[in-house]
Picture 1 (tube, protein in one colour):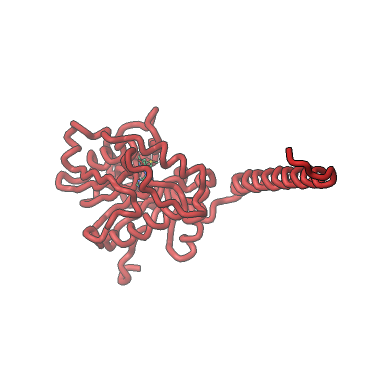
Picture 2 (cartoon, rainbow, N blue to C red):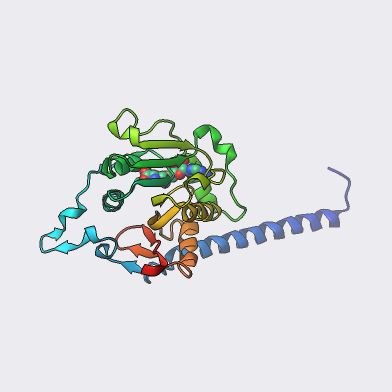
Length: 268
Ligand SMILES: C[S@@+](CC[C@H](N)C(=O)[O-])C[C@H]1O[C@@H](n2cnc3c(N)ncnc32)[C@H](O)[C@@H]1O
């Protein structure tokens, strides 16, 4: 211990104490704000306009017996599958896949949804699905403001090297891409994709970049779907709320899915 005067030691002690107290107060305040933000939408509706399933596509029209036969699909339940869609969400995605010739998925994970797309799409359809290889975690380019919790989740979910569809007849329709989504060059698919599913890294800079690429790949009359529109995925939630000010997005009732359909100007 250096031979400091007692007053200097006391001053250092008090300064440290004050710094710790400030840190404690700021952390508490931040946690409180975060909790409040999560609760904000519990009793009020979400900003993106909610629509009934019947308004999503003609195949979901209701009959006196319930959903029409055109909404029939093949799918596997989400029980026990990592980062899976709910059964209602899988049904919707599968029904939309029936009319699609080219599908692009950001975020393969187990590959269950890619398999479901392939099960339902036309025999000559192509399913392109992109994911981060577990050995390439260092290649991610998160932005400074990206949600910390979902940065960690993105890394944890990037654990698959083989997928649900491997060895199954659906495999021949699937083109597996291993890449960080920001590094992926979507130009060769420009204007050619009927259905894009955005379910990769759930952080602001990634969902923004994936959306830009999705819009570039999208065909006229094509559809983009985003998953995890909920306050618990704060970056996705805030991004879609902002985007809905300029794009006619809809939130499908009883799901975490948000949809955009590109309409040709003559039909708008
Ligand atoms: C929520 S899971 C996708 C679930 C899948 N769509 C399904 O329905 O089964 C998120 C996926 O995004 C992938 N991912 C996370 N960060 C990524 C990145 N930076 N680039 C590409 N893929 C990423 C993860 O590897 C994981 O496969």
